[in-house]
Length: 425
Image (cartoon, rainbow, N blue to C red; front, side, top):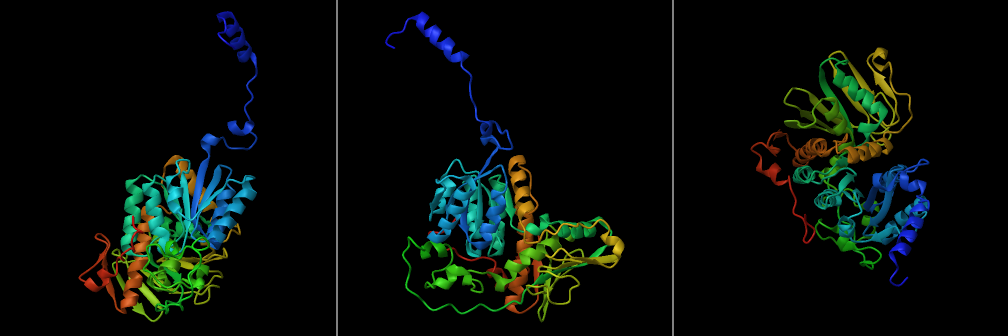
């Protein structure tokens, strides 16, 4: 209308106000849906086989919307994009090789990262600086210094951080740790963490022609690690065992599963053993309060001197009894009475579903999740310190307050590594 009269305008406005307003139920959070204002928008960096298992747990949550994937390998990014398309029924899940595009998006609240170990800390630090909350697969650091930087940064920027040490959220491990912490085992004197056989660093693989960066960006895949000639086996998972890509002779990768639980059971979150001794395949750490931390072998099927089946067995001993459990859910104890009320669920210790839910709830409440940055800091530092002593082939003494080795320049030089430019925080 050109130059409407006042009477015409009022009639038109009245008609508009009389029409019903139709708002989709999904926008209001009805019919089992979650309103957009209450959804957590997720992006991911570096998602391979393990990462996809964790991502599937995120996608099962009704309040999660997954919108973007960054990966140096185009085929992996495409697999994840298709998973999202199938789940949400849309075709605009964004994929890129540049993780900073994920961090720069204002609509993304949280970041899941499950890259190779050498990228975990840096991705998490950059995400925290960009204002994102982070779920990071373990081990979350390659060195003691990275453990410190990761915790300091996420705390400084007020971010919610969850390490993928999901056994803190699995029933049988919770039950065993609570037995130890409750005093039902008496005064705890020894905690046992299973580890794999530690091995010297592997020789580097033979050089192969570099792939097209659009297919696999080798420079980006290496990131902060020193430059090495390309071999396709590295990007297929064969990076394990190589010093620049897999820290501490493999101890941090496996130890962060089980040593973390021992720290929890011994009420030692926030501290580290003060001495590490070595005898064959066994590492023994001693806390300042006298509790022993015994790291001993248990293969992928729980072989060794253990009473339970399954990977990642742990044992907690007090002067009134002991308890053991592992990924298969079995429990053993010095007395049947200790196991009264034990969980009957068959959830495997490798299942991160409840751990993911714990993280998301804390994102909303801004509270600390089960495996927060400070818990992760001390547990990871314990693993790195134990590995350094093993690599040096001798007993080492550690100060939990300064987080340095005592009068040991050689060991202290192994607490950090330089990052390759321009991959830095």
